[in-house]
Structure formats: structure tokens, C-alpha cells
Length: 294
Image (cartoon, rainbow, N blue to C red):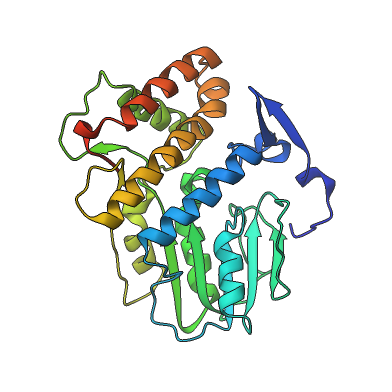
């Protein structure tokens, strides 16, 4: 499915004051908004990751990746940064929604692709030095994940690397003060229920290392980061991350909830708004010492 001229992928539908890709909703692929508000959130999320990762775009010890695959490029923040830094590289960037991007570097081939579909035979084995996949859990079916990781492993060149980054979509409290009475906990419960019904795995991050081993890869390095929400940490960098993350997570709570909670769980928009607005207030409660695992 690489026909980048097909109008069906560009069609949008408005629901509850947000715009969605019609093709994704019709086929239950990616049920998050694709509007300007979500574009801004994705840009902000990339800035947070850049700060969190100390400006490192990737962690594997690759001197100069010549062939790169980016799965789920979104607003192409990571893709375009890589294209600029490694201007002699060739990058294939895949996403189900063809975003209206301000920058399209000459060394990037942007393609429309549903990651639930096999990457073979369109993409050849032993091709890529670096494969990057970040925050694609909302768009990949639970029963696709193992085959998805095997696909990525097959596409790697000898000594190539895969870098997978996923949230563990449960907001937690370092102080242990988050209870079932909090809107954040109620949001988590509803989100897990909606994702179960849509055959998604919001906690897939904890299983990725095992999937990589099962796919035959070696030298697997796993790192879990408790990304703070709010400026409760003493470390200056993590304070900055936490303060920026209040807005990011607040926007995420709405974007991830609207369609799944209303269309799948049968909630009203008013009830979603009630939970989300209460949860946003709780994000600023320093006594909760909130974080989201990554």
C-alpha cells in the first residue's frame, strides 16, 4: 500500500471538534486526531524527547547510518533531524497518514503505510543500518507486534540496529498518593478497556526486549525512563522535562480518549471532558509526583 496519490488517505472527518483520518477510523487503524492541535503536541513531544535524550537522536553505536527506516514518522521531527545531520543517508519514512509537512528533505522518501501490514516484499531484507520506531502502539494491533518486530529484524543489515521507543500508558505516582478516586486513575482504567476492545497493547514497551530476542537479534539493551510530569524532581533537566510534559500529557489525555471512549466505550463527550479536565488539574499536583514510564 504505497500509492501516495490515493485520495482515500487524505480524507478527514470531524468528530467532537477534532479532525481524524477517515481511512484510519473506517479500518480501525489509528484512532487519534490528525489536526493542527495534535501536530503541535507531536512537535512538543519531540522537543521533550530531545531534552530527555540529551540531543541524541539514537543510542546504538552507529558511526554513520547510510540507510535508515523510520516507522510512524508523524510530523517527521525525528526524520528531518536525521536527514539534516546525515545528509548523505537515504531514509524511508512510513506513516498511515500523509501529513502536510513543511519540510521534505531530498534524501527522505515519505510513504503511506499501515504498519499492521507485512513490510515484505516491498522492503528488502538486509537493507537498513538503523530502524527507528517510536510511539506507534496506538496504531498496531496486539497480535501484530511479534511479526512487526520480526519484520524489522529481517530488514536489518549485518551489524544494524533497531531502536524502539514506547510509552507504558499508565500514569504513576512516585509518592504513592494516586488513588482510584483520582481522574487520572479513572482515565487509565477506561483507556485500557478501550484498547483491549480495539486489540491494542498500551503496555507493549515492557515486552519489546523479549520480542527482539525472539526475532533473533542480539546485544539487546533495554532502558526504562520515568518521565516526570510536573517540576517535582530536583534535577534541573528533569524539572524542565516535567514542566513541559504537563502540557504534552494533558493534550495526550484528550487525544487518546475522545474516539475510543465515545465510539467504543459509549461515553458522552461531556463525560470525557469531565474526566480529562479533572485529570489535567491533577497533573499539576506536585504532591503526587507523577510520571509516565517510557
